[in-house]
Image 1 (tube, rainbow, N blue to C red):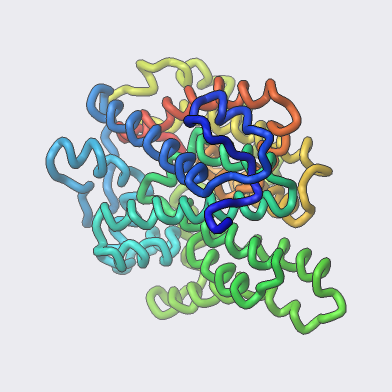
Image 2 (cartoon, rainbow, N blue to C red):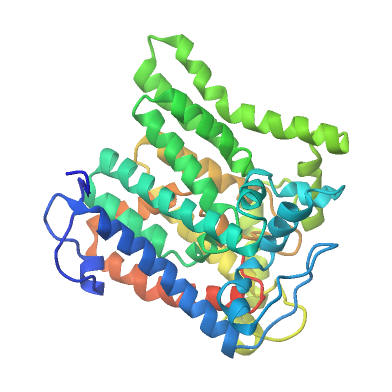
Length: 409
């Protein structure tokens, strides 16, 4: 059927029991996927609005020359709150370009360009993020269903939709656009439609440096699917093409093709061995874990502190590592290897004072983590409940902190 996928379904109303335990049917109506997307987005939006209205706010500085979006209380509580932190940079670039600001080059151009195409405003940014997340979910489910079966696809979709930092797909952040492009590129490459996969892979590196890692799964897929036809291996070069295009642009604006990498020093990022990063994260966490579970500290007014986030950074890093270990033989190699390489980036490039900075959010870039979670939840019913019993409260905490301009990831 045109409105069905090879995926579990039910005609019953959507409830927590249905979400956690799909029925035995082999097909699902597309409207079920739509409901999953809509319910997860509305969940984060409702929590964020309530937090904005009733919890103490921090103060966060906007990029030079810009101000946070203003308007009525209703506007700020429903839409404006989604432009905090990095969202301010994307909002600024969409409206003013890079304007000679070297620091802004750490935020790659395709997402703010997409915002500009929709009017350069907050609503334009949200439209791009929401639409991109819907596409990302669609391609995730199709890819996993093809590789691992419909149940694994169902749980993978659940894992991504309700991940504690999945609210960034609601915000003026580039994660959802990256997910849509990366997942669609891998899906089309897996189905040998390389002239679609290649340009999509090139676009990922105009959204995030993580797009460059797609070269490795593309090489593996080409090796598996096209080994006698060596000329087709040039399709693995597409991610590099996007990065080269951005670097060429930077030469014209700043005279330095690597200015985006140098800008990372503004956050104290530097190369380090992964185990040293994890050890530093552990040492810092020992001193801050009490503040990370103290709501008075977490929601204090004034300039927000990054220190409590160290606890959650280490927690999410350890969860991702555990997922990688337990899924090494349960996932296709090209997906598993991409996940490991994507996790190695923040583990090898810590920030001063907050070694694992942004780890809960950067797991979105390492999206096969959700596939691994889906596989594990398919095999173990107790893990499905643990995921939601633990994950949803953390998601509520995180989106509440984000809505009130406190630091999350």
